[in-house]
Length: 294
Length: 337
Image (tube, rainbow over all chains, first blue to last red; front, side):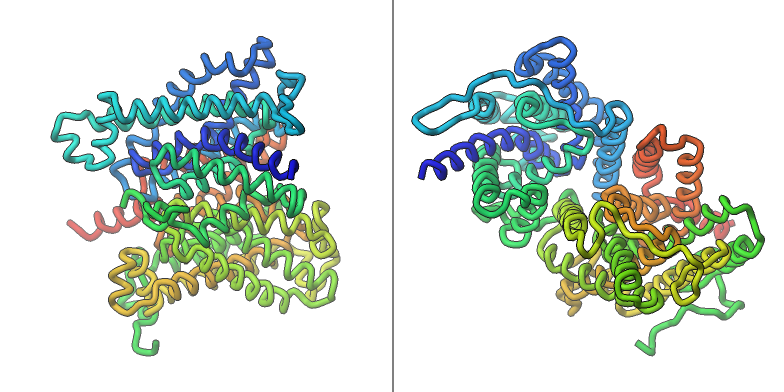
């Protein structure tokens, strides 16, 4: 029984970290109606950034977020101007190929600059929290809290602020929003850059938990897509819900099914979700079954 | 099927530039140049480049049947390539079956894999289809790596390098070049035939408007499955030929996202959904990448992919119709006074 509680709990915590990394994707997806295939590579770059901060300056990665998040916002804005914006009015395939090429580009630049070695940072906290017989990694708990805070802050922003209202109007009907005086191109830019900044935050939370290597993005981007599909496209609380589902399934299956399964886990889970629940767990939005931006 | 126009070979009616479903002077000229290059006895390292251009041209055409004609953008085709390569090699090395037969068995198994992928992705569209193909190839790759009693695991598989006609191992690169050119021409002929056939029109209909195609009596799922199976089978044949030439299967290369990306890149640069596009793409990119690789050496791992992907971004944003699109523009200029 204790094992089960332990597994479910750590699954929930890991899942919330996955959710944090997926929020940026679901935001961009929901607003721009495009998929950034380089999302995983954005994460990889930000993780290298956080790793470098810790490695070079001996800084805590959570403090490094102060630099990484704005840097990723800028990076996202540059990518938007150079690649996404010119591709928006072209056929659907152009965005697909352009972002896919960007992902290969970033991966191989990282390979050349950093080699294929796995990079880790030394543990930050020496002890786990112990409650009864349950052990909780402090890094995971921190990730969980940051994700919750981030989700609530974003929810508040989307509901209450002018920017949030403009984003929602753009999602509902871009043309009408434009006619009402909402600068839709700027909303797109802010969403894309903001989504990238969120990936930067996720990277800082993930660096203490996972190793960094040039192709690390592929594993995580598939998880992020599973979460986006499960939770419903463009939904922030859906991402949290989907993330926790994925985390619990991963934690239970790696214990009860087979540990060797771990290497294939991301891919099999993705395919299973695609086969059986392409409309998401609640079956509301149909993100996977509609072609985007056509 | 008998009533459809077959590719016209009547010289009086032949176009200068490639047209859908018809043979043009441009294609005949290109074929003659290729034949001349095969026969010319050029330097050995140039022959490498030549036969790789042929092989990847054929592979790009095979990818294009799914990606260009049926709109099934796949980033997992290296799974089919690997299945073909592994099947013929395992049959030859472990069971003594000649590759001349093994190639067809490999193509068949690759086709089954293609059909399975199509069924997995039956309901998926857009980005989710693409990611599923990627995930599918990763599952196949990890499976092949771990099933080492069959595939040799991380060590890979080697074919005896002794020249042997029955074993499809040749001493001269000219023979290989001719074989690869034959593969390219065969896949090209299938593509051209497809363009003029009822099945080809089904695929265009499914690609352009699936609902309308369904309403007009075309079964989209059947069409997608058949297209992916055909594309996979042809890719599998390419994989077997690759294995017969290199005589060694490196599991980290034959099924890899990198290779899958290359299959998609060549048609994208050349022009999606055209027959000549993938060939031109391969004739441009393959020599370029071989040159880069030999100049830069292994010291700059990944640099050729950096240059590739950068090129692809530029091509996609500024010339989305690819080389074939540029060629078509040329034709139009020729026609209008």
